[in-house]
Length: 298
Image (cartoon, rainbow, N blue to C red; front, side):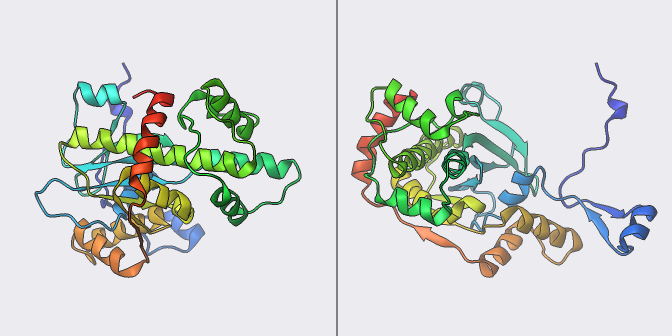
């Protein structure tokens, strides 16, 4: 029952709102600056920076993952998708750039690894991210799995112990060292990507050929390769600073320097490095996926 008159107008990304208020312009010295709406919130700008190729009018054959502490995985849709399947699978319809809808699902991302590092370093270690990568790379693959989105991992005091306890409770081999804990976390995130990929294909009505991953999480190359292996799809990563780049390109579109979102993505493809990961050892991952589903439920 809130009066709608108190709400501001809804404007699309790329809208030029004009110059700064005079007081702000005087304080900052930005008298010539224009205020342009980016894709918001930040995931919309990150998706705008996905360097994907799309055919106008055709169903996109790619999906995106904006990977950081959390992971947002979904597809770009021309219209909202509102049906019982979307409700049952717990997807959201969020505004995107260029009149599109981001049909997506929230997944726990690098939070698991970040919290493990925090606990270990608080206990006297001094491990950086490369140290963690070496530990996890040395561990045996595809041994145990967790459900990354389980409530157990939302805010535990001791993330490594929470991961071990989950495997203990589900009758799996309990990770017996730090590398095994990390490997369990990373491979479980990759398996979750596979599960959500299947949901995306169900909702958009066709096979997805390429997974684009953007954001700071792509610096964990082990996870990127695991995503390709688990999903059996080509993974393309980059750019890292996707949110800032998508914001910038939306301003360029608004200014008329770039003609469209498709052209903006072409500029991004030509301006920032990307890496490609091809699936490897998929039969072992297929077998392990059945065990993962047994742990998290299909």
